[in-house]
Length: 319
Length: 286
Image (cartoon, rainbow over all chains, first blue to last red):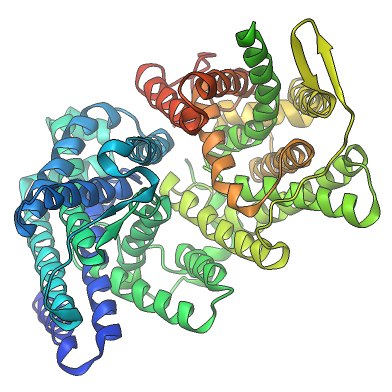
């Protein structure tokens, strides 16, 4: 598929999402908002997880910080869109400070550290009751104008956020920064040797992966009208975003969007039809994904699928 | 004297934690796989014990060997069928895969057992030593936990299989050149990890109510213990477990029980940055 076709299809898909209020009910619009939201999160994760190859599970921490920064700003009387900008900066600044410490770790240690961050922030937020309402959560001022207007507003808002992250992805994919991040993904020590400032590049990628999660979190808080620590800082959500990105194709420009859309639709279908077993089906999707689509949906090839299942062919490869 | 009681409580809890984390630590150290299934395997062991006790009146100490063997078999199969084909893939791939398997296992346990908390009740009374009071069933649990962890240590130190596991952990390629069948060692190691998870489940069922909602709590504790103590060694898990037990016990008193886990995680993050090899200082493998 040439890239001009790909951009054309992407534009049609975005228009399709934006047109949902014209032909679908509020249920369809809600799914469209979810797809735009998770596309933005998945594109964000792609900076650190896809381009740079660091297994970060901190998405939920940035999203949750965005939720609370946005909600608290709005409760202080700051206009909604300004509150979202504040949340973006809070998440970005937090990631930049954290990255300097956490990005010294690699592989499994980095993964565990990022999970630890989500837990610690969740526990701090839920015990700092005087500011955050603790486990009771926070109410966020609702938009006026009835459910239809609210749904349309947030559909446009999430789609705009998604397009901004997408534009950032395209720009970085073609830039010196993107090239450097791919070098780090392949071999960090070698990248360091040839003169890439790996520390600065990694912190840049980590900060980028957090910025827009903050925006999405704040927008989600305004949309939902209520947030609590358990839902805002859920590890399950971090893992969902990672799976979406892997499903579409990590490190590609369109993969995260394709993965987020495919996953959200599948999840909606399983919830609606197999209530008791939706988690198990989700697990089966993940297992199938790992074996049969190691490069994601965008790199699907029928050749060699079965060969992957033979244990001997890969387990002898050097580590 | 109240602090002495807290420290003793912490040590008793820590022995249970060591048993909980040692299998997870071994799998991570030897296979370089972060086994997200671990928490669910603990709960599976706990449920099997509970239903053996409730349905057939089997004492947990008698159920323990059966549960351990069963989980060994389950672990061997999971590793051989699902994880072996991609064991050399990056951490992200294997972690995501075990997460997928965990969702499946968790879902079936929740549907068949429901999430109701259940506990085996063995009323042995309490013992008092000076000012320290301790329920006997907890001491019994601690004894079992230390016994099983000790057996694992002896197996790793003394048996041919144990030496082969340690060799693979040190250098997988060199081990393969020495004639060790690495893929089989991987399967056995994972099976031992599952066995220790099941054992921890049996022991926890005697002391605490078990429910599927606890799987992620147990998994989180295993992370913390591994990082505190150091990865892939029995000593590391023992040190990490006892440190976390004491820290949680004291933090529960000083800053309130709801913050006990926060303190554990904060300690983990601090150690990750300052001393990634853990307190025992045995270097981990990336």
